[in-house]
Length: 250
Ligand SMILES: Cc1ncc(C[n+]2csc(CCOP(=O)(O)OP(=O)(O)O)c2C)c(N)n1
Image (tube, rainbow, N blue to C red; front, side, top):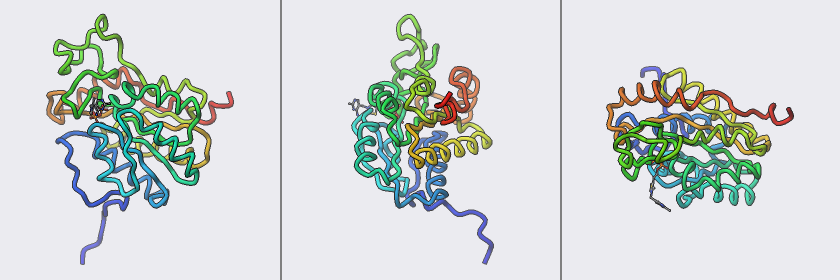
């Protein structure tokens, strides 16, 4: 018998990911599942799934899930966490879901200091519905509804949602991470773990924003899309911890 050098986290189900080649949802699912296993909270965690490709998460992570209507996951998570305060609760939402249709729910959940964690997956586009422009699409970015590139005179400017949330007093932890390199995957996992630990201390709203790719709707190969993220998204959406509990008392 050979020595086991790697085994899949118990936080993932045995269902193979169906995501497009180069899509980063699978990486984010894996590190999230590993964190839940490492914190030994798989039995105590309830996820709230959104609408969009991100919504498939409920098939892959080995915890109980509730579906939320488009953008409304923070309202659903609020109800679950208030009814079951001993549970660990998270939402997993795309940028179309959270930074567009669900802007109000997300901002007010942060303002109320709701004690759940949000994983915000920013791929700069509406993935599932065919690559329409999202509030997070960059200036000049070609999407199916901005075929000549996003034009600020028509469509305004990209919304840096984690930066916005970090300004809200009820937000205890906000980090902006990326999964474009192995080092950044490790950093992203650390941020997700920290967010859950802060939730478990009951300090306030916690959010980790993850820069992500959508090769299919960006019209690129997986490698081109990683380069595009590095050369474009990272310049606009700055990585790092935007809010920590220590800043709450300053
Ligand atoms: C109320 C409502 N409006 C619109 C839709 C259609 N819809 C389904 S998925 C989606 C886009 C999701 O994009 P995003 O949240 O960025 O997630 P991704 O697919 O990129 O993971 C939209 C608009 C819907 N299901 N419900």
